[in-house]
Image 1: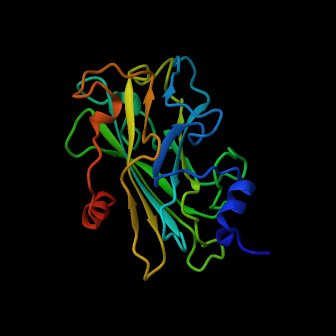
Image 2: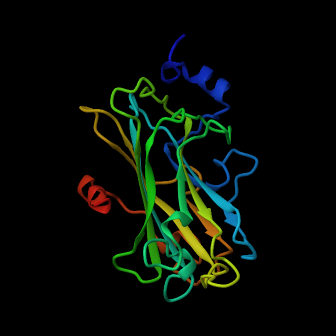
Length: 250
């Protein structure tokens, strides 16, 4: 049988349900990629339980030249509406919520099934929360995840196919009751700024810095005044260099 990464474009789209898209770029959504029935840009939560979670899904429409995708790197920035970052969005040792409040998964074998499931449960890696170095009302979520070197699942991705990249899982712990963190109900804007597609040498990395459909989501709403009165304006897209991208992950 021919490997999935080498299937003709039409066959790949039919077998995976991945619809071809016209322009390369990344997408960020709640629950699914943009063509999925459960995809949403807005997530609301009553902050009335410490159980359960909310799932952010990153995907991308493949550019040309992805001959052997081995890893992805993601750079997400978020901002809450007040002058300082809401405590509910601080996650790590010594912060209001534990590091485990932010989970990650790169396994789409159990769904959703709208876009192409390339990874086949193989990547090793994680997403992590970071304080923003320059703005007190923002934070970052960084991720690096990869298939093991030489893994037979490292194959090509046909141009125009939308591929699942990652799941960021936001848990509800410390949302209510004794010891709850303030700010769960605060508005937040979450923006995927860069998604890097890595391939084994000598293939160079490919930086996606623009959305195919939408590279941002909103938590609870977004009415905060900003230059364009819309969520993505809080972390505008900008041209990235290899040196800058690598510096982000240090």
